[in-house]
Image 1 (tube, rainbow, N blue to C red):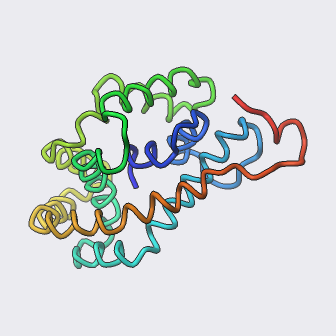
Image 2: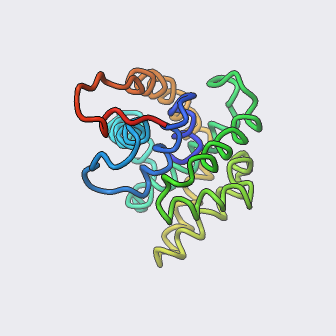
Length: 205
C-alpha cells in the first residue's frame, strides 16, 4: 500500500495517521519513545503491508508482471493509490480534497514526532500536492520512472509500466476485489490494546 491508502486505513485518529507515514521510515523494533497512538500507527502500517503481501488477490496481481516481478510491488502500490482516488466515494464519506487537507494539517501539527526523512516527505506532500494528483495516471507513471531512476533500473521500470498500462482494467478489478477486505482488516487492527505498563506506554498526543 502507498501513502493515500495508509492514511485512509489509519482512520480518524491523528496518532495513527502520523504512524501511517512513519511506517515507511522506522525500521526494526519500536522502543516506546513515541506516543502510544503513533507507535500503534507504525505497527498498523506494518500489519497492513503484511496482509497486502499475503493476500491471494495481490499474488495474482503480481503474477501479471512476470519478468518484472521484483518491481511489481512498487508499481501496484502506486496503482492502488490511483484506483483508490478514482473510487474514493466507495471508501470514505469525506471528499478527497478535504481528507487530504486534514492529513497534511495533522502531519504539520505533529511534526515534532516525524523523523527527518518523514518530515521532508510531508513537506513535499504539501508543496507538490502529491495526494491530490494520484488520480492522474500520467503522474503515477512519472513517479514510477523517478523510482526506477533512483534504483538504477530504468529499463525494467519502463517495462513494468507498460505491463501495468496494458493490464489496467484487470489491476483495477484486483484492487476492487481486495481493498474492502483490507479496510475491514485495518478497522479491527486500529483498536489500541489495553495497556497496563509504564507511563511511557500510556503517553498520548
